[in-house]
Image (tube, rainbow, N blue to C red; front, side, top):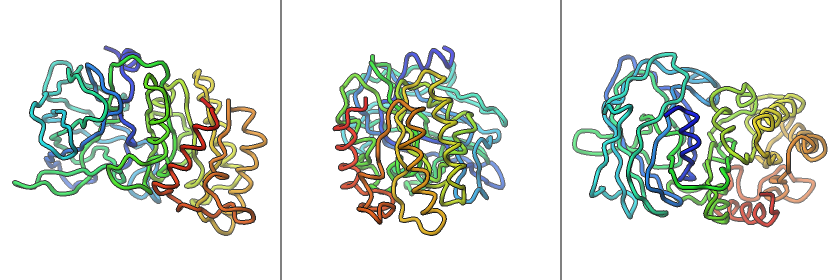
Length: 358
């Protein structure tokens, strides 16, 4: 199966944020065994997991990892999954995951091509949890430091909190879908303002209100910048596999000193790249993040441009800022927190679904 075949066969069946955020920087290769529980949205007969050795967007100030960094040599020593009815339970049946028929997988330094496992027969239903357990050996590989799911690694006879294991970029199900809907954004899209494992972020709440034959892929990642997505590399390439893409970006660009014109240019580049790939694009105004100084001024500038100019490039605009911000003259100030809490996410999802943009 080629990567093209993978995307034709599988679509996302979990609304948790998925991304490669940072690289481990161990002095020498170490072995780690870790677990993550993913709540499945709809189910399917067969599943497959997608991975990559490439970082999606710059983390924090860029001193650790930047967009498009590539990991080193590392190995998947074992990978297995199982279904449970409740989060944290031990699966009654484990399924060994293979890659090209092999239980181990070597990932080469400098390899930018995404890779995926062989089909896994699971016969899952929506609401079940997929327990993902991986044992990896390496010194430099991608992981998701700000994942909003609880991640644990084995320490002797115990499991302890740690994010330092590679996480799938898609929990892919082979069920038939009519529309593949993607959410491209930063920690606000990922759901960092909501509780761990709660699935109360706004992308998840929107998914609950969509037809059952839609799939939702949350490609939000903490600290994400529009100018990283605009490089049109691995991250945006994945987004292009969706039929409909919701773009909610700009906060981190402004907080990191980008000008209004620069952010407008990057957003325009993203929209055009997605449109050229055949995607329907819904562009969000930049949500409020209690900005001050130049960042606040640029926030108003960018949102005016989205409403009046870039809207002509996109298929639709969702005024996220108006839903989550305070009344004028403090529209840049958040009502539900810069990372909207569960209440704010529910309000945003309700407004989005009522707008009937998709």
